[in-house]
Amino acid sequence: MRINIIAVGKLKKSYLKKGIDDYRRRLSRYAKIKIIEVMDEKAPKNLSLSETQEIKDIERHRIESKIPANSYVIALDMKGKSMTSEGFASHLNRLMVKGKSNITFIIGGSIGLAQQLLQQADLVLSFSDFTFPHQLMRLILLEQIYRAFKIIRNEPYHK
Image (tube, one colour):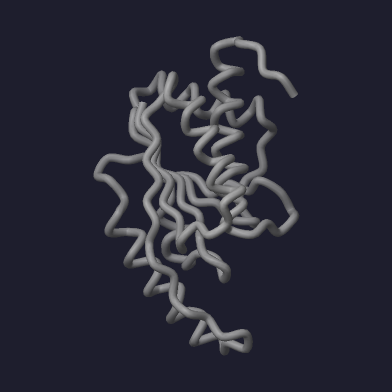
């Protein structure tokens, strides 16, 4: 299985890089993981609605250009579908059974993802009602993907 994570912005914090590297290493037994960073647009604090939309559209084009053909796309958004870890594992397992071997997760930047991108995604997924920094979301996503593979294979996972 191939898992692509397209994320807006560069990862800056070394502690996040270490955690991400650890989960990428763990996941290498189960899937090929590729993290693709796309440049984020500078977003001043007091953006108008039209400026926000313009920035999201610029980032959307960058993201769309990186989505592999025939990939099942999961966009992360607070308003998406909530799942338990077991439900997420079950969803990934169903995708694999159906022959979906290329899955792409999309993590937006600090102002989120363009509505058009959310509408085009095969699944819009919410990890929580909480707001997380988009850089931290990479680590959380990788941990949940790893947990899902452990659940699917009925392997122990230390909590």
